[in-house]
Length: 238
Image (cartoon, rainbow, N blue to C red; front, side):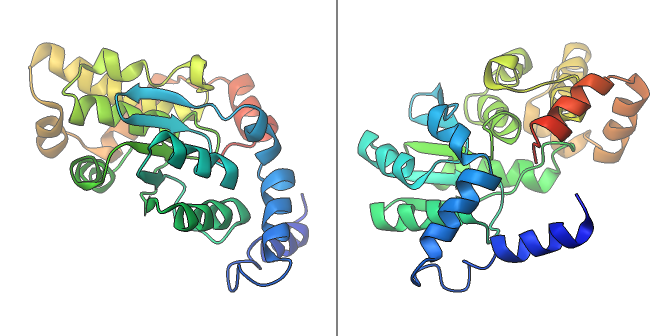
């Protein structure tokens, strides 16, 4: 898509942030959500799963889905896309406010190793937010997957193999694309732990090197062109 079209589209998509309550703003944000952000797919298939008792993961919820979450008893929603002024975030934030749900932003990456700050930030959230919780990204596949894996490793003290189950085709995660960095991160801990048993957070604090792990990932040449085409071009994952 030409750059000027991308820039014009972005200006239109962020126009609702200044005053989301003004006439027509919600409708514009809804159009943005449904037609550009693939919200129409999420209405049909929200990709919602239970990670553990009181912990859910899903794709970016619509306002109706936020309200339904509140009816199920969810108290906190964690947005893994970050606090950006686009239609889906505006609508879900308004729905959280109207439903009395706490909303936290904890930006994660789908095509990069998690940073130490992101990992320990997740730990703080797990320990301090009101449960039940629901965390989401755009499609519920990659960032929701690594956050679920971190929950298993940190909050549950589970194994790397148990954490890797949260990064699966079942949730739409494709490890053969660059999103496979997330699998490689968990596998790096698993491989280290097999030879030198260590708690996950201790490994992160004492041994995890983000740059070195990225270099090792590329050295392993795990990406497939068909998978990158599917994830980046056809599914247009973030």
